[in-house]
Image 1 (cartoon, rainbow over the protein chains, first blue to last red):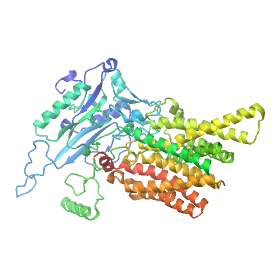
Image 2: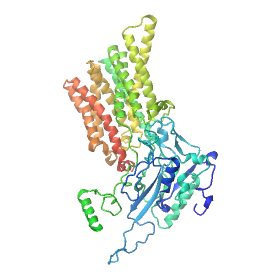
Image 3: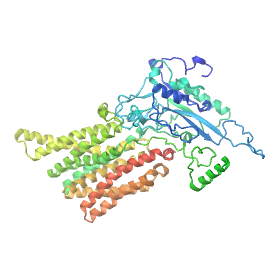
Image 4: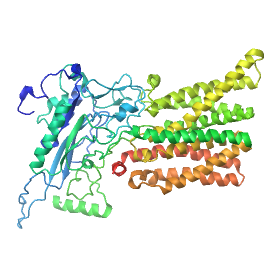
Length: 291
Length: 323
């Protein structure tokens, strides 16, 4: 935590990989300042290539979306709603009627791979390239991935993507590695390490969940009526290892309100496939037998 | 022009056109209608698959169901049909892996598909089905040819006969899977237009595959009653499936199947495989009906993949499917 200095879980060395402890990220927009240091640190450490300078016109966000070459993405959300107990001041520029300013809030949130409890990408991967690590994160082994693209349509959050030509290592699927390489050496993930406000907190998952619940309580007491945790444990995703605090509805953050892991559709779909396959065999046999 | 005047201009443009060409004006309280979700960014990722996959769905389906027809023909003494059907399966067995490998991001690593077997991944199950179908169909086509031409006599001839029959049965078994698993493959994803039709898709793909295989055999000159019946049945079922698809709309969640260019593709394909093929066939135009069905079956695979792309890019579809 801020104030703990080098003893913060974001800074101190650890042995989570060796001890096989489940770890996570808790990302809190209420203290994020939108500096994008996490995006930069992630790109630097993981040598993620530059994927173009495109001006989006969407607030201060020119990154757009998580993808094969964007593993941390700071969202910039502008809403005409007050932020907590915000007191709208008088219009600053030449309004003689003394009208109050419109309520306005600017929210920043650093989005990342959620490292789902039931991960769609991991279940879908036909090569076994995507695995779960000792710390409970979901990792793509780049040397095994052949770029079939099935994980891309199996992620409920649209995180993983296939890297297009002509970028380095094109053709494979990429996403956040949870800095597995750093973690194996006792270091914290680059984004958490660099976050100046500890909006991104790295630590033991159980600690973080308690901390997240506490933070929601605090914020609500401070007038942030719509503060909530985004950790869909009641859906088939079964909870996130990288979960978020949200102000307002998940839709505004481009997050699905009720994410589902696609394996839940297997039963009904295979049943339909078996029925039609057997029906086709029966039809073929009957028509050759009797016609 | 002052900034206030410019803002008025943008507001006017927004009111009249519903959109503004200028950038950087997309803010809360601004003149632009708020886009759904996060600046209209996709919530899930659209598929990266290109034309190879749609074409493979068609060819694999044809080949798979051709093997099924071949096995049925063999069981009831029509070895000529079996021979032709197995050659269709053979061609599909060669083309399918080529198309699949071409679509991979890293084609040289294609063998990694057979590194593991994961029953919960339709892509893994499918890879094994394609491989096993390929082996049995390729062997089957050649063995049936050797057997039919009586190349070997005596014991060797008997061995060839047994192996040919076993290969045809194997090809039919895996072909049954090949023609239908593709529906499961795209159903078990996060794309709303696909997973909302997870029962419809395997049935539609399987039916389209059966009709295509029967139609192709008819076009090769086998104008026989069993194939006519299968084609007729497939066209009738396709007509019903179209009606089902049109009557069970899911609003914004699957609008990619009904609206716009992709809606048109799917509607056109269903018209070709369903009512048109049915009417042409009843009117006696067997080749025309078969061609109509084949074209429709091919177009349908492209339509469904394209609709998945549109649906995956549409944040409102994802939200609507989950609410």
